[in-house]
Length: 153
Image (spheres, rainbow, N blue to C red):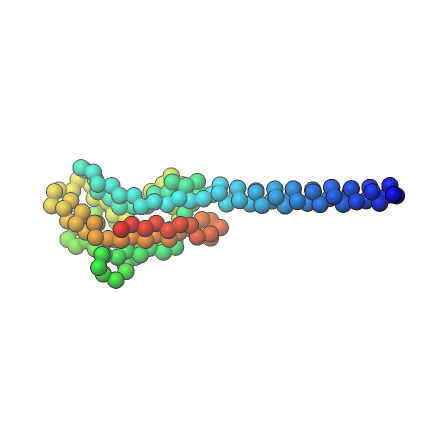
């Protein structure tokens, strides 16, 4: 055999191995980049002696961008975008509406509603309404990749 042909074939094999390693490295780095800014949003419910709240907390390492919020009462098909509409005759310390499009930073919290130092009758009213609500929150990461939605029942 001619040594030039053997060297050319070996060079081709090394080139193919190098290209496959480079492609694998590229794919691994891309997966790492997605995971290094992955948000993990959770519905945060607080029912304490001196504080009742409903909010969203980001346990991930990247910002979560809320794309859709659907709140429904059990046995009712009407969908609302905010939770405050389900409560009548209650004065809240904090309430937020229009959270769609909001970006929640890692390790931060955004309240739907919060009441500090509620009396017993207010606690009963709030608990009664909250136990009948279903909440669905859809969100994406900074790459507009849809994340797993939050559901409550």
